[in-house]
Length: 173
Image 1 (tube, one colour):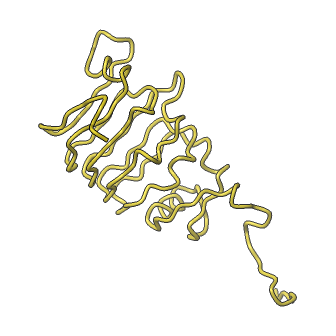
Image 2 (spheres, helix red, strand yellow; image 1 turned 90 degrees about the vertical axis):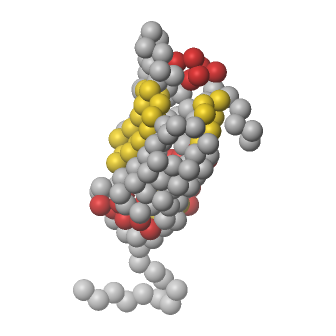
């Protein structure tokens, strides 16, 4: 059908959505993966925030992703597999609810370009895999430090890392 509209009128699938209702995803490979997973429908650097709020498991491995902006709005995320990408920074995009409460988190970030990692703002993790990254130090909080590889704790945290990578409460940042 043909539509006649006044000059300046546009058609959109997102009528009524403000920028507060949408999450900015500048990496086209990240957004295309969200489209492939049925969480978005148009490659336009935005995803409807309500469509990602309740996602608990996200596998975005092997997708040539380099920019993780937007991850902070995945408020229910428990498991993230972002392995085999080109990610150099991820910690500013975690959001404070990752692995929150009784939910237990898994972060698989191996085979990326991470040169620093600060997970001290995260709650409970059972697995962190950061092998094959140019990483020197993983910054953790006191609680995380006490449960890393400690099988006697209620929820031990397993860390897979390369030799020479240290785990510390202060990585000199």
